[in-house]
Image 1 (cartoon, rainbow, N blue to C red):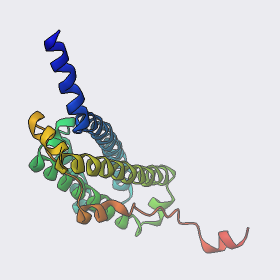
Image 2 (tube, helix red, strand yellow; image 1 turned 180 degrees about the horizontal axis):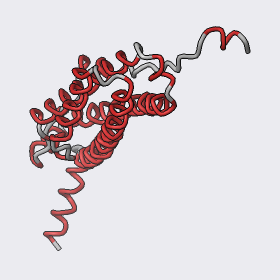
Image 3 (cartoon, rainbow, N blue to C red; image 1 turned 180 degrees about the vertical axis):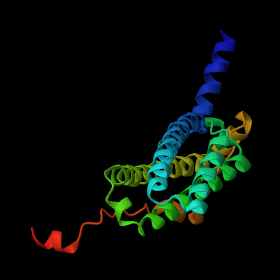
Length: 202
């Protein structure tokens, strides 16, 4: 009976020192990070088809096509697991690889601007629209992750919950910085190449 009272008392003390908040915040981070990974994977899945369509019209743009393919390979080689948020170095490598992917895709879409027939291709337009939607979802998912990490890190650093965090091994988790947030905050523009005369005729 005495041991049960001690356990109950400990639970009450820990609850008042942020234990439950730490648990809840940690679960929020796992959920929001899973969504970030899901959206990044969605983007990676679109890339091969996008490259193939562009190649059909602009095969000689080899450097850009290779850059996108290599950027996707680098992303795929990383172990994008839920535990990634507990490893600052691995997290930064993952973010850097995704930044390279964003840059490579932007270059690919810029090249497409020089090929009217490519821009008019129905499959290319569909893939471009899907890509823009995915980039928007990535931004939303990242923002939710940033908010979840901010709340969690405040709890880990604040007294007296910081004592509970130290007791149970909870540490601050990495987040996206302002610099790499700006890299991805502007999604690729979708230009369906509708002539001005067509627009004015309606």
